[in-house]
Length: 109
Image (cartoon, rainbow, N blue to C red; front, side, top):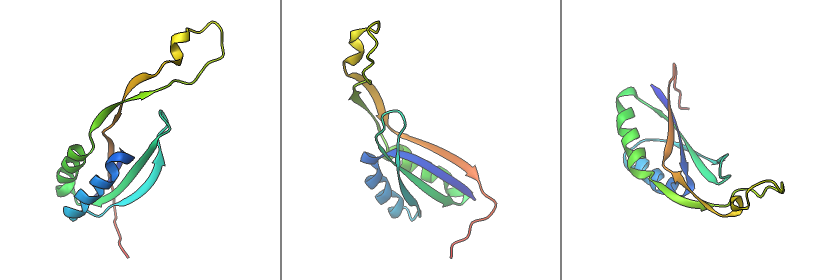
């Protein structure tokens, strides 16, 4: 058995949830917040058999696409800083971060 922790952007979470249900893969969804952009994320917790891990990873990879987004860096009041720092910059968001961990036991009551 494996434990998958998949952290995805909120924009992809509903589609990923539907795709996992269609594949008969049970998951628990948690609302989380990203540290870099402080934007909404969803973390999926999936307990799955070893042989189904590639299937689950493929679903996650195909569903959670990276995209470009503009963000405004925090304003620094230091007069020595370059004033261009207050303009929006383009960053890549989305996609998925997935941790695959071995588990010794899995119980469903």
